[in-house]
Length: 136
Image 1 (cartoon, rainbow, N blue to C red):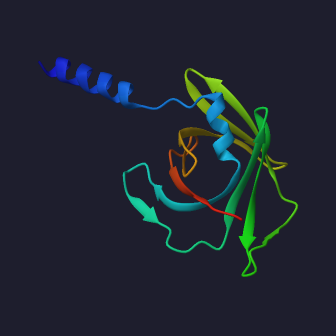
Image 2: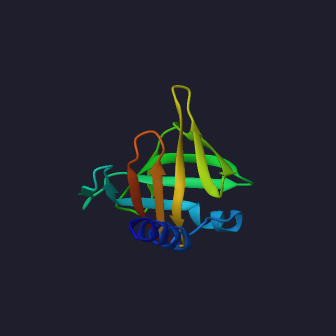
């Protein structure tokens, strides 16, 4: 009986999980504000005010992410520091493979819509929840 419940739970979780398609990647381009981070132990750290935003640009499964600082006049300050991003699809997962001069790492795209982005760091199991910032 216990095994039946475990199998049912796993099947339910698998059936409810959303896979990210290559066509969904158009939503990632733009400015994103982090709302919260879920730690591996389940604790949540909320971000009420953010000085920086993440800007993504991905085309043909490659691009970059950089930190930007919004200004009062609607512009963004930035520097020349970019994280190169390559997208890969492995075992049904959409992975963002980052590289800088100093490090490389991966994040799994858990959820992606026009309004929401959820990334899971594969190195430390932190789950980052972002909301899209509207620009004019």
